[in-house]
Amino acid sequence: MCDQDHFEDDRLEFEARGMVTRRQFGALLSAGMLMALPKVVGAVAVTESEVTVKTPDGTADCYFVHPASGTAAGVLIWPDIFGLRPAFRQMGKRLAESGYAALVVNPFYRVKPAPTAPEHPDFNDAATRTALMSLMGALTQETAFTDAKAFIPWLDAQSAVDKKRKMGTTGYCMGGPLTMRTAAAMPARVGAGASFHGGGLVTDKPDSPHLLVPKMKAHYLFAIAENDDQKQPEAKDVLRAAFARAKLPAEIEVYAGTMHGWCPPDSQVYNQEQAEKAWSRLLVLFKSALG
Image 1 (cartoon, one colour):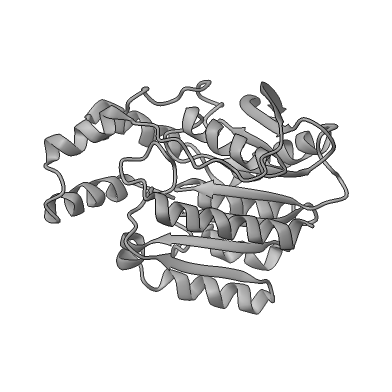
Image 2 (cartoon, rainbow, N blue to C red; image 1 turned 60 degrees about the vertical axis):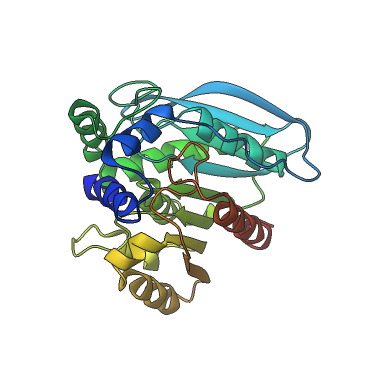
């Protein structure tokens, strides 16, 4: 998954490029500016609500948004380390306006309800950094399997979800590996997955997400940050080989000029042009794989 090195390396790269100083980098994080996402062409009216989902480990607080009429394919959205917050509600709503029923979850519900990060998190602050890393460190492959087996059936039980269609799952940063664990835990239901600047997709540990590919039936999109690829250039090739062996389609691309975390609109490294490219590829994937 993501780790502290991702954030520290991004700060150092900003400084090396002469973009910001250490103090300015912290200010950017603290500012937490939420940029408005481009409007969806032909957006449908949606219904949104705060919901709870019971799991074997507790009750998860989530955001559910879907087209106001008819039924739609369900999508499970895993946030990054900063958790369920306005930016991800905005992203979920945008997906619903495009014709999908989206459940954005609080992955840290076992510890605390959202918000699980300060409103304007400063990763240079030791206490904030330690708290967030502790939350993420409590997530394991087993908790991901447990959650997937609770969230996917919950979506299936909603009248707004078309149970005849496969579901999709998307994840950002630490959420990238969670999509792969979701697809492996519920292969009969998950038909498409997308990882955006996912961290820890390929590791040398026995629970590495890439080792789960043989258990999946999902078509995939991996949108890789350029600086993540520079740190682990072999990961994309390992993923390509794994999906090829499983005979599953996978679009794996390094997005030029991007830094880890570039997709959420409240990110200090948000890259709208490349985020929109990744968004367009996601819609193509869902249209082809979810029907």
